[in-house]
Length: 310
Length: 273
Image (cartoon, rainbow over all chains, first blue to last red; front, side):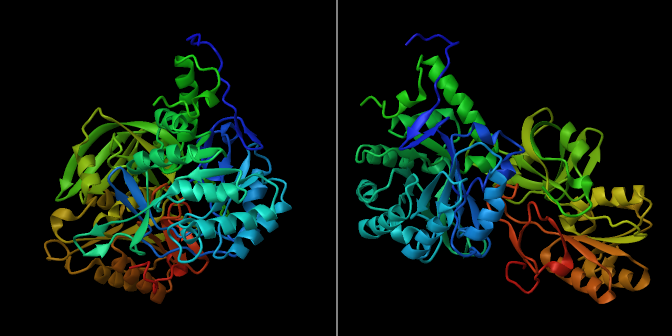
């Protein structure tokens, strides 16, 4: 530890077989497929781009209102609105063809077979570098979180997706469970190369002027700084429970937040809700992490992973 | 960002811009006017576009709030806002010299088709906000402007001076009859559609009002554009919070709108009140 301020910091991290140029990823559903953010930041400086959830057929999503602001956070019940995997290949992957960034496609389905068919369709697409299996969306009636709140279905969908691809397979976990470590162990045992957490916490808000829920669907997923302590605790628990890498997220607004997640055991982190507030957040966090390491004489950002002193 | 049409005028990419409060005053009951020094946005913005303003400095009120640009004066933009909730109360407290930041300009604004000679602008309450810049732009282009402005009381008729300056004909309606016709502005709109030879109707206001204006324009065979207000998180087309049902599928108010061709909106759906 030299403490020199001019040293370079190696920002690369390993995520299973993937080597990323930075630990800073984008959280699914907060970044579309990146195009809208190209006005604000350099997509090629991201560690990886995790796309919005993609399903086999187009999904309409939920009725509006779909969001509500809550103290230090927001609720959403978008409901995985997306144009389906064919349109995703035609438009989103075509756009990303010319962008040098690892692309991780978030995969959604109502049934195990639907998850598998989305992956099968994407296997022939060279622009896809890996998959994130969404078993944690709280805003759809079937599929989503229904798979992620018990070990057996989580294991089943992971095993089926694993059988469909040799590409890196990440499983995104729900915080709406009794024991997140147990689910993490189940999906790691079923072949996941990494786990990402947390998805949103189920919540609700009520308009006292009208006695109506603020979301048309009544309940939705809470995100933003309000959930950071819960997310951090869960990342710490999961990192201690599995040997696969952990991608940490939940209310990260700046580099200090990101560092906390890495110290708790995350190998990489994702920016979610903060993308809505400041579309340049991913760059701010990247630059800030370099600075964070420099100031402490840390030569490789990966040294932060699990460096919590207890 | 907005593509397809021949509107190169909408093509300036949005940016995160640091701005300074020049003035912030109460101009009517519950209505504020904030003036921001925002050189980039002031140059780039087109009528009907909006900015996404960060109001709080901490994370307690996390989300930005969308505001249409009312007017541009040099390097300054003017925003009208209604003090409704905690966010706009915070905005009302911002004083001259304070720094804020915005993302903008955003959205697909009003279309001004070539060859139109006479336009009717129908504003209800704070719906006058996005129509101010449009009225000035139309007048600059030599398009005759007729304005119908409605509010609950005379004191809350917003931007009267601006409209009076540029309009060839200017009519008002107030709920209490304190200025102009007594009743809703839709009554005035109906009269004007019958009296005047109009090429286009532009409207913004409460959605029940917009629905009636759109129907009146359709009956008169005049095209109509409406500016919708929606809750949104990102403002740049990503989060899908602000979707609106149209005959061409779900559209995002933030990038496909906020201005829509009234004929494409599915007014019978509960998502449009």
